Length: 246
Image (cartoon, rainbow, N blue to C red; front, side, top):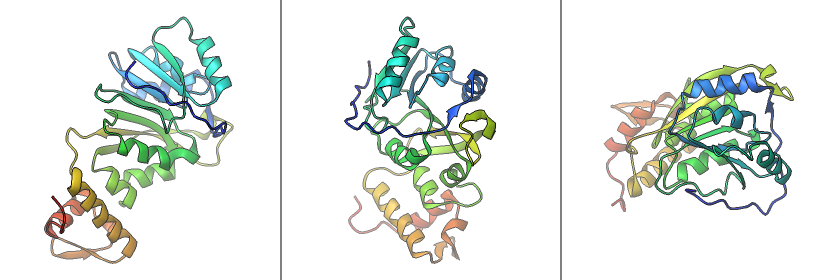
């Protein structure tokens, strides 16, 4: 099995809004377009609603769950299905494949969204695609819809971001007080920046947003959120290579 689990020593289970039924899970999975021979890691599998829908479209589903009782239920439910491998692990500590291509699917607990997004960006071998159910406001922030954010600009170094599907509040149990959407992260064939240049670009972007002042782009000055990702890249390159950058 590519990638070995790290079992969490924490007994804390992050509550989240479960999918209402199999129909909702099928609608989400159909929107992904996943198909064999995809290898998929489902993060936070819970009772296996998405797992059951994914197994019919993928070569193998690794269903990761931190709660031991739910993990045991997953093992019992899918014990005779070689397409499903339940794994007891913290989704933020799991060791993903070092070389093999794979995809990620997750109905992300709201409290873990930021940590999971950082984790996916930091992986040496990021997923080819990640399909994440997020709060709409969080999704807009990470996708940079309307205006770019510091988070969206840094995410787009390695990924493109699309909102695929709007979900109804009645699609979840318990019903959340916010709207949710399905977001797709697609790994770029080659990151826009890497190594020291990536670190320099990140510092450049953080300074721009933290100072909240105008950023020079194409002989004009704009507020940080007014610049597109491409304009941030152009502004960085026009500023010249910072000292200490290889």
